[in-house]
Amino acid sequence: MSALLKVRGLTAGYGGVPVIEAIELEVAENSVTVIIGPNGAGKSTLLKSIFALTQITAGTIMLGERNITGLATSELVPIGIAAVPQSRNVFPSLTVSENLDIGTYAAAPKDRDRTQEKILALFPDLVPKLGQAAGELSGGQRQMVAIGRALMSEPKLLLLDEPTAGLSPAYLEKIFDLVLDIRKSGVTILMVEQNAKQALRIADAGHVLVGGRNFISGTGAELLANDNVRRSFLGATA
Amino acid sequence: MIDFINLYLVPALTLGSIYALGAVGISMIFGILRFAHFAHGDVMSIGAYGVLTAVWFIPIHPLLLMPFGGALAVFSALAADRWFYRPLRKLPTIYTVIASFGVALILRSLMQILWGADNQVYVRGVTMPVVLFDTFRISALHAEAIVLTLIIAVALHFFLTRSRTGRAMRAVADDPELAAVAGLDTEKVIRWTWVIGASLAAVAGVFAGMDTDVHPNLGWNLLLPMFAATILGGIGKPMGAMAGGIIIGLAEELSTYNWIGEASLISPSYKTAVGFIIMVVLLIFRPQGLFKGRLL
Image (cartoon, rainbow over all chains, first blue to last red; front, side, top):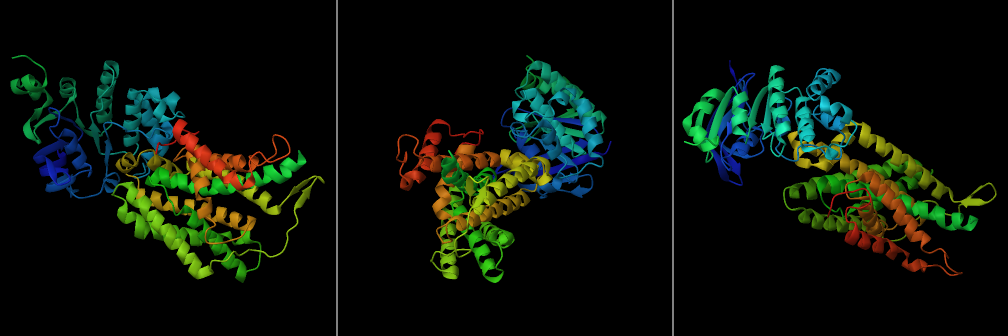
């Protein structure tokens, strides 16, 4: 599998203060890649940096053969990257249908109706809610609207920032199943997750960040089996 | 009853229409750019002067010359945004609020230099009211203002809910950061906000000028009731601002009716205070307004 996204020596942060340093990351095409690590490790900052929402001071980000370092967020959506932030990820006063529609504004899908149909097949719960304001939905349903909105632009790469944060265990399983379904439809996924164990189970590859730097990388199975990772991040006792 | 309709209700709805058209812009700018635009009244006045100048050269009904006023108001608003507000966009919004005070003074001074400080009228002479069913005596201007405002309200509603630009505007008003993440062109949305806000302000300015006369303080004097209308409707809710404008207009005018006994309930010279009282009471007890807008 060739790498869709390549991050080389990335240092980035806010207001001139670096949060992540010299990060190396590769995301294989049509894979689920998970970033885990303790609080404050810079996981979300890494995702935001790929999406041009931080200040990058060193390093490069390549999408396929194209150097996308320094491109603005609004330029990244049309070339096939979509992101779902962790919180405040729907437009509350817009209906579910309007929220999905917003996803098509920066990058119009070839056939809007068919794309929406495909997305609603992934989220059947949303069908009866299409005319409802997104702000009135439950946390899990909002997450689905947010992911649906991102998918409407038919991205090659989907960035998910803790998609299960604050959700009930029932929804947690649902979201992980969804991630696999989305990958099956040909979208590559890079996600940050707190629920490290479940996330690594479905992941093709995982990266552990500690203190803003790469700590260890491997396949999902390798990381699950790694004693160091198990002790530090998966709650296993020695 | 007929007197109530002829002398109070229709003028109240006209005043309400003027407030409504001005408040829409204030509310949209607050929703999308997150600041109270204190120069909005002066953008109204600029629109009124644009039409006044056009009337000098083309002596037809002022409302037919509205595009001239609209264009001048839109140009002023876009220029103010380009040179004064955009450079301050990344700073706390209080900087932009103060800048808008400055822009208000600049615009008013420019109007005084270009058109003089005197009161001027669109059409000289007395216009007779339209008499309906032998009983309703309604000034043509009042009828035009009310009907046109109604048409604008319906058009605006469809624009905001059905058009791509309208939906993008509502999305940016909801959450500008998420709108950027979704790849929306926020600067384009901002330009549209100015275009719509300033055009409607120009229409309001012309109605206000036709109702009385055109002078450099025309819009500035209407600013506070328009803010009251914006807060009443819920900040960032354009249709709420329209409803708020009508309510404030009705409250101001109808407070002078002789509800109890023979005399006016409130002396007409105090009627503007009614709008402020509503604004203060709302800010204390229901700051999100009638349509659940953003908090200040």
